[in-house]
Amino acid sequence: MRVCLASTSPARLMLLRQAGIEPEARAPRVDEEAVIEAVEAAEGRRLPAAEHVLLLARRKAEDVARRLRDDEPDFDGFVIGGDSMFELGDEILGKPYTPEAATERWQQMRGRTGILHSGHSVIRLSPGAEPTEAHAVAQASVTFAADVDEKEIAAYVDSGEPLLVAGAFTVDSLGGAFIERVDGDPSTVVGMSLSTVRRLVRELGGSWTDLWNRS
Image 1 (spheres, rainbow, N blue to C red):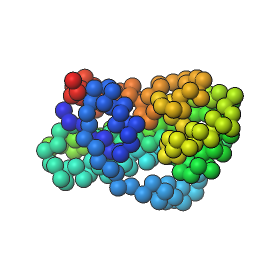
Image 2 (image 1 turned 45 degrees about the vertical axis):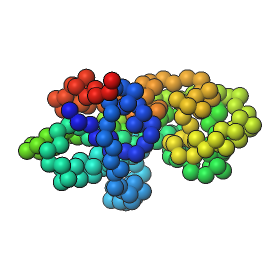
Image 3 (image 1 turned 180 degrees about the horizontal axis):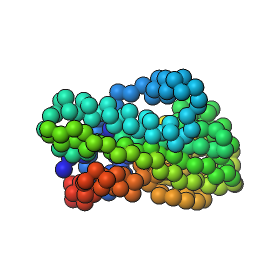
């Protein structure tokens, strides 16, 4: 049974590998900002974080699944798409991209608890059949140490790690020492809830263990 990850995220790839799955990977061709802007304009409202990540996860999976059907009509397996955002109070925090933004984030986050929202879309592709899809959002709360000082923030930002991850932190690498508690599926904070993906695969008639292809 083949698995295609509709993402170039190293964290999501690592999670699947640790779970016994070596997926194929395809970069989704989705203009995320344009998608959100179009939907919010059409509906006249700002999408909450859970809807935001689910919309993008579904669009990413759909894009890759469509191209897979065109390129490889005999593809038999699952396409997995995901998206994540961090919510702190009333503010939604994506990737900071710049050292200045990452530094400001950490000054705001220390001593507080936020929610990591992770959207998931799984599409079942099989030759000669119409695609089927299942989706869900997982959440996990993250509590940061209150005593993270300016020197530690500067060193962490200088490492470059927080610049390209949702919320400006990781739980499975350098940022883990600054996190006191995670409530929820820990893999959600890494980038994808494995328990959620397993449930979606089962909803589509698959077996999680049939996806294991790593020794």
